[in-house]
Image 1 (tube, helix red, strand yellow):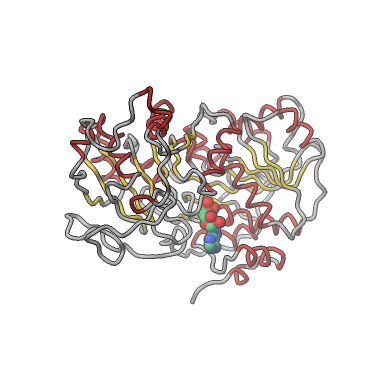
Image 2 (tube, rainbow, N blue to C red):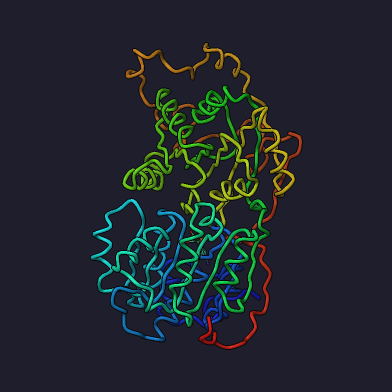
Amino acid sequence: MTTTFDQLGLSQPVLQALDMKGYSTPTPIQEQAIPPVLEGRDLLGIAQTGTGKTAAFMLPSIDRLREADNQIPFKSCRMLVLAPTRELAGQIAQSAKDYGALAGLKVHSIVGGTSVNKDRNKLHRGCDILVATPGRLLDLIDQKAFNLNGLEVLVLDEADQMLDLGFIHALRKIRELAPDDRQTLFFSATMPKQIKELVSGYCNNPVQVSVTPAASTAERIDQYLFMVQQDEKQSLLELILSERHQVPGKFERVLIFTRTKHGADRVVKKLSQCGIPANAIHGNKSQPQRQRALDEFKRAKTPILVATDVAARGIDIPGVSHVINYELPNVPEQYVHRIGRTARAGKDGVAIAFCAEDERAYLKDIRKQTDAEFERLPLPDNFRAVVEGVGPTKPAPKQQRQRVKPKPASRGGGGPSGKKPAPKHTNRKGKPQGKPGGGGNRGRGGPGGGGRRRSGGNRGPRAANG
Ligand code: AMP
C-alpha cells in the first residue's frame, strides 16, 4: 500500500503546505527519512538532487522547530542548511518558505557574491532557518556578526560537492563551532573516504538512507550519442538546435554542458552568431548575471543554457527536456549529475552526448561505472556540407553578422520553445526505431524512485553528546 504524508507523522500546517504544492505521495527518501528525523535522530542520506531530499530534511525539521517553539536567537539561527552553490542555497531557502508557509518561521539565505553588509543587517536579529554557503557563513562568523550558539538542527546538503569546491576547512571549523546537542542531517550523492570521515565527526549514530546507487543514471532518461570531431561539435549543436537535424523529444529547455567556463562562453557566442539566443552560467559570472540566466531559462524566455558542472550542480528547474553533453565529463559521476537535470518530478528526459576521438576513454568510464546505455545516432546527411561552410548554419561573415535575425521559434518544426514533429521513423515514445542498442522503456517512478524502505529504528532523541 502507498504511504501518504500524513502517515509519516507530519503536522497539519506542513500537510496543508504540501497540499498547496500539489505533492500527494512521499518520494522514497521522504518516506524513509521523515519518521527518524521527526524523532530527533541524526541522518545520513545518500541521495542526489531530484530525489526529493530537500523536503525529506525540511518538512520534519519545520515540525521540530515548531514543536520546540524556542525564541529566535540573537545573531544566530535555529536551523542551518549548508549548500555548495548560491543557486542551490536559493532553491532550498525557497523550499523552506514554501513548506513552512503556514508555520510562521523566519527564513533567510546568505551566499557569496552579494553584499556582506546587507547580510550582516539581515542576520542581526537572527532567524529560524538560515540557508548558507560555507564561505559567506564563516565570513560573518569571523566578523562576529553571526554565531552558531542557537543551533538546533544542522543540515549539510551535497557534502561531496562542498568538498569538491574546497570547503573542507570551512566544514571542519563549522563542526567545531556548532553546539554538541544539535541534530545533524547529512546528505551526499557519493561516499568517498573524506566524506565518511566528515560524517563520523558530524553525526551521532545516524540512521542511514540511500535511495539510488551512487552512480546510476535515472531510469526515465533516454540517452543518445554522437561520435563527432571536437572541432565539428559546434556545427552539430547548431544543426540540432535549429532542428535541421531531428533528435528525439520535443525541445522545451535545453541545458548544455561544457567542461570549462571559457568553453561555455564560446558556445554561447557562436550560437548567437547563428541567431540562436543562449545564456551561460558559470563561476565567472556575477550573481545577478547567473540569476538572470536562470530566470530566463525557467521562464523559457531563453530556453538554452550553457553551463559548467559546478554552476549547474543542484539546479532544480522543472521542464528541462534535453541535456546536451557538449563535452563529456572526465568523472563518470558528473555525467550522472548532469543528465539528472532532466526527467525531474516524474517527467521523461533526453540526454545527448557528443563524444570526440580523444574523449573515448571518458565514454568508456561512464559506460563502465554507471548504468548508462547509449543509442548511437548518425550525423546528419548534410553535416559535411555544413562543416565545410556551404551548409546553412555556417555563421555569417563578421561584417554581416548584425543582420542575422533570430530564428522564429516555430520555424522548421520549432526552436527549443516551439513545437516539433516526431522524428520520421519513431516508436510511441518518439524514439527513432531500428537503431542499435536502443535502451527502450526503462521503467517509471516518482522522483528518485527505486529506494527501498528500511526501518529507521526507534532509538529516541539524540543525547546531548555530539
Ligand atoms: P530535490 O531532490 O529536493 O531537489 O527535489 C526534486 C524535485 O522534486 C523538486 O522540484 C521538488 O519540488 C519535487 N518534489 C519533492 N518532493 C516531491 C513529492 N513528494 N512529490 C512530487 N514532487 C516532489
